Image (cartoon, rainbow, N blue to C red; front, side, top):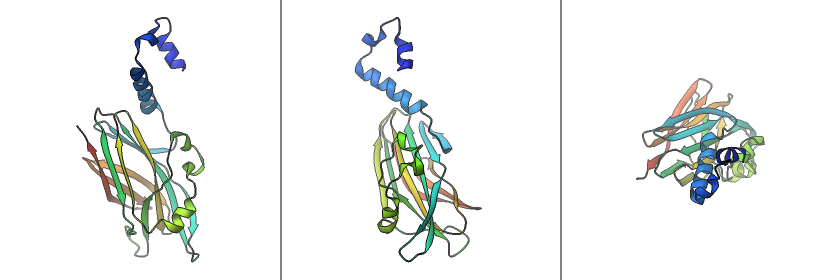
Length: 202
């Protein structure tokens, strides 16, 4: 409100701005300038900005008492182009063996919780009922499909369920042309996992 008053004071510009122009101005201010905490990496490619978070996680014991590691991340995609973006991410139900040790594996999954800006600074990034997801949802593929309009953003959670002595140190969504990859780094091992695409509509 302070910024808006400063811009308009003394000239009565409010009357000259249509509602859709005011909404667009506020939207651009919110999306472009609002900085989130815990950003580990940020990349920009032809107007598509991707931010990835640091991990937050803990251990998890399954019904047989076996201990696994669980890390939660968030990803933010901002559309600074003039065209809508078609986003599709798909993580399979199968676990992935990506490390040098044959008994080490991990599984990527999307959480059903809706991620909003106010949750990012909360404990565990605001994820609720994680245990229920781990108990019942890991045997199913998870998918996200969404249209991101110009000057809009998409925020979502990514979970990593893994079996290994070391922890997940870094992850992040990576865009190469229109293809999406999820990069996983554990100790000195890392890999790129194909997971979807972003298509620019014209």
